[in-house]
Amino acid sequence: MDSALIPEGADRCSFPKFAIGISIVGAVALWGVYAMFLCWFKGLNQTNMNDYYGFALWIWADLAVIAVGGGAFFTGLLKYIFKVDELKNIINFAVIIGFICYSSALLILAIDIGQPLRGWFIFWHANVHSMLTEVAFCLSCYFAVLTIEFIPNILENRQANKVPFFHHLAHNMHGVMAIFAATGAFLSFFHQGSLGGVAGVMYGRPFAVREGLLIWPWTFFLFTWSAAAFGPCFTLMVTKITEVITGKKLVKDNVVHLLAKISGWMITTYIIAKIIDTIYWAMVTAPSLGFKMSHFYTNNSFYGYWILVTEIVICGVLPGFLLLNKSTRENPTTRLIAIVLGVIGVCLNRWVMVLQIMAVPVMSFDTWALYIPSWQEVATTVLPVAYGIILIAITYRYLPVFPQERELNQPRVDQ
Amino acid sequence: MFPFNFEWVWDTAHIIFMGGLWYAISILGAGMAYVIVKAAMDTMNDKGESHH
Image 1 (cartoon, each protein chain N blue to C red):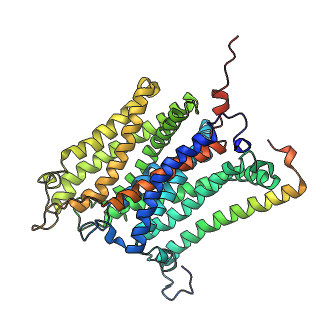
Image 2: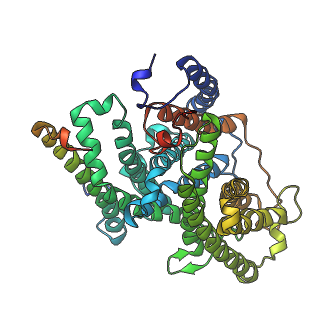
Image 3: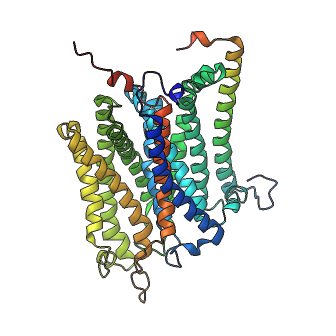
């Protein structure tokens, strides 16, 4: 039915099977869209946010997708600026994942602001003293970069590429992609950093506040670093999931090993810096504000030392070690464990930096404030996941996303 | 966003923030304008056979 649109030589499932799969995920997406419209029409009273939780599940999801979407800017930087040519075989998919992550982040923000019709105020009436204004600027511009990076892949669709103008446009865009990639890396560095930079001004929240270099708290650098470190893990994880679902090998092992190795180095160096930052905060910053470290991890039913150990040791030190070590990196099982732990680790870091901050009592008469999101918040957070699955399914079906797919899946000649 | 907005002030913060935004937008806009014009010229010159 749609065979004319499928890349030449690529084997895809039948259209009815594809449509059924999309319909199932589409139903989940519709649930999220319904919740989204409830929030827009009835307001933020649909959520369980309150005076304690001005930042809640959405902001965690926002920071998490931005962090794991960092694979796009970092892989682009390596491919186009540092000329790591092997990564050309995974860059398309990294860009698509980044596109999904950043469009999801913008969607979540559009729901979270409560008054989406006034979303443009952040540009028109910009508060130039706000780090979040810088985040909004960089996020929007970087989404434009990702769209530009995604366009050539769309134009390489079998039918679109027959149109001479589209063919030339895709070709010319590849020619100047290094400029867009460099701009994307610059924008990413600042918005990832500024999200972490918020901790530098949270003087009223001793759990979060950090010292740093000039106007930049250490978390400014740690957020950028962690996105560059764990973003490729997410790219590799989604690639693996796509390979399992399609039953095909899509990227050669040497490319996966290379990206995993780079990620391993980035994770290890990041986690050393994170450990130093945590020790300094626990030994110097928090005590200087009148708090012991135990204050942040005891006397409540959820946040214990386990979250610190899980984030730093199990989901930081361990994946770093597994990806640095050649034998465990090249073993598919231990590599998969490492990249999954890495993705969990960076998401947990953002959870701690958004939600645990809100939960910790600050004043002497305060108590721990634990928060459970409403179903509308959960549905709108699941929405980007469903949207991402649909977009990956459509792009995989109709676009030449993986340059090595055909070579890796040649029909065997048994003679 | 623009100097003609009522809240605009010619200070360092506005110049850095808005200058950075317009700088990024200019690079993206100029880059896209270049590739679109070049693609249109290539199409008119029918260079399709020489690529790939």
